[in-house]
Length: 406
Ligand SMILES: [Zn+2]
Ligand SMILES: [Zn+2]
Image 1 (cartoon, rainbow, N blue to C red):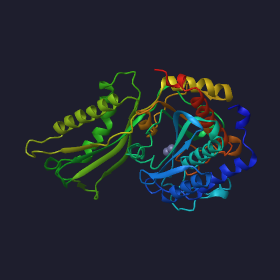
Image 2: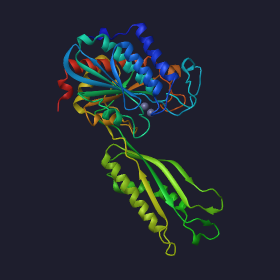
Image 3: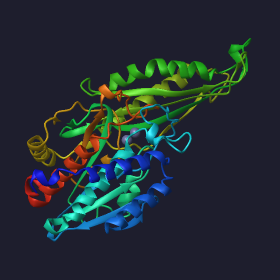
Image 4: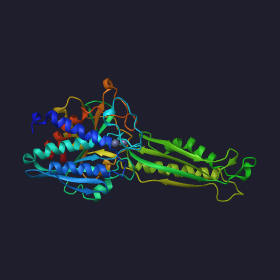
């Protein structure tokens, strides 16, 4: 491949943009990407690329090169968010047709980029030594995520490495960013339910107040975690929901607090869980009354997490060299990020790289962060993303050794 071959003509660019806009118009929430799956299948069939449905609403496809070699996978997510889109003059050409659902995380652009790369690779397949797997994965946004089901369906069979790209609306158009090693966090949802003894406010000595217990938990848990974690460890714990009570002058029977915590190492997540347990055990003793046995009582649910996302060191080092040779704005030492991504599950199985792509453009008023109701992307990011995917794919197939060095 030389870089000249990677200049896309106008009809290619407008085909890619039309695809992104189609996906944007018909967003579907996690695990419900049926129309999206059908559209992806139609496009792949149109390009003559072998494919099959997988993982519920996902698709696995393979492009076979002209001669044998390694296999590299390109992954895109497919789901939208339950967000009501802010309809503005900027996005009027592709307003969401599904009320309350919006491609607010750029997965519409990710699908268009992988299909764009697929079209180029299919047209140039005779010159490829090796094969390219395409992974269209549903349900990135909602744990347990769609990656597990795709892996079970065989999307990584015969695959030697994998790459993925994520667009960000608050990152400068055209910039490519990543880092070797831990790049994104492990995120876990927790829910604490406290059972107390309900009663009239006039006789607190006869009641056990679950609201007081939850308030004390919220006030003390951060300090307790800090007592157990190495001070160099970065983590964040946030509260997302607090529920209790129906009546202004009654101590309620129950209170509940829900949130997430994030860290870069699963062992640190386990330490956070044990700090939550120890805090709650202490609160049960602190709020106990000798004449009210067994209360307060707590139930802790900590759902299984997305693992931390760890970019392979050798793969990332070689990718950084190659991308810097072809692109002007590459940051291979980005700050780690406390967001979570189930692309992490693929990286636990095969080496690879997850990179961020700038889609923001303040001059055109495109600055909103992902998950905002005003999120959008400058569509000029799409050819850049396709070029990055193709540059790495072609270089890997031609010379895989430096990417796979132990
Ligand atoms: Zn998202
Ligand atoms: Zn996303």
